Image (cartoon, rainbow, N blue to C red; front, side, top):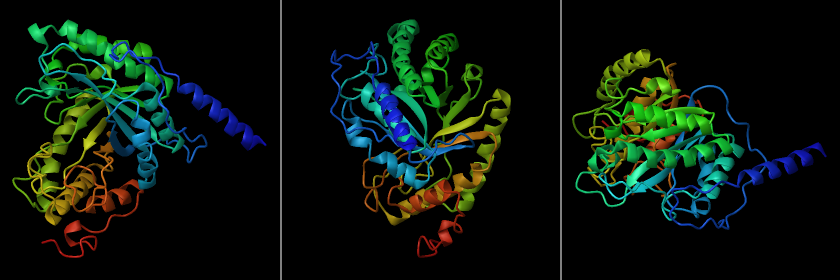
Length: 382
C-alpha cells in the first residue's frame, strides 16, 4: 500500500514539473504542448550525490519533438554506468556579427520536452548538467560562437539578449532541480567583458539556486583571459588539445603530452581555487584525431586505425585524470542518435573500441592493458 502511495505522489510531482513558462526569446508565439510519451515515474536507481560527475553529453537538436527523439538514449547512458548526463541545448543567431540571438521553435529545445528529459534522467538515477550554447545559422567564413562580436561592439545590447536566453534555461534548471547549470560555452570574444558576465551570472543566481559553471575553450581558460571565475562554483573546460604530431600515435606520446598539460591546468586550478569539470572529453574515430581533436572535418574516413586512435585517446585521458581530486567532473562527448560502429567516424564511442574502455571506466571496473596490446583489438596494434 505504501509503495502505491509513493508511486502516485511521484506521478503528481513530476506531472506538475512539466508546466514550464515560455521564453521571451521564443519567436514561435505558440506554446502548445507536444504529444510525447509520458515520463516513467518510479526511480530506477537513486541519484548520485557523492564523487566525481561521470557521464556523457547528449546534444538536443530540434524543438517540440526532442523527447520523442531522445528519450531512449537516457536508459542507454544509464546502462553504460554513467551517473551524469549533460544536455546541450541551443540558442541561435544569424552570424557572429548579428544582434539577433533567439530561441528557434524548430531548432531550440522545447521547454516541456526538455523538462521531461531532465526528469527522466533523474528517474534513471543520474545527475543533470544543462549547458546552453549559441550556434550560428549562417556563419560567414571561419565563424563560430567563439568569434561573436556584436555590431558596433554593442556588448550591452548583446548581453541583454543573452540574459534573456540563459534566464530561460535557469528557470528550467530551477524547476527541475538540475544539479549544475553552465552559464555559457566558448564565447571567447565576449569573455573580456567581465562586468557584463558578472551581471549575467548574478541574474542567473537570482533565478537558479544550484551550482554554476562556465565551459571555456581548452586554449582560453586562463585568468588572463577570463576574469569571472570567482563568481562561479565550477570551472568548465573542453579537452581538444594537440596530443600528437600526426596520426596513429603511440600511447606513450599521448601520456607525455597530458603530463605537461595537466601540470598547467592544476597550476591554474590552484590559482582560481575552483574544481575543474571537463565538459567535452572526446575525439573522433579518425586518424589524426590526436593532433586536432576539435577538427571533425580533418579526415572523414572510418578506419580500424581511426578507431584505435580514438580508443587510446580515451585510455590516456583516463590515466591522466581519473583519480585527480581537483577534477569534480568528466563528461564524454558524445552519445547521440547514430548507430556508431565501424562505419562511423564521428565523436560518439557507440559500437566502437572506445565504448569498451568507457563502459569499464564508468562502472569502475579494471581496464585491460594498453589497447595497443589488448585483447579488445585482437592484435598487437603495433
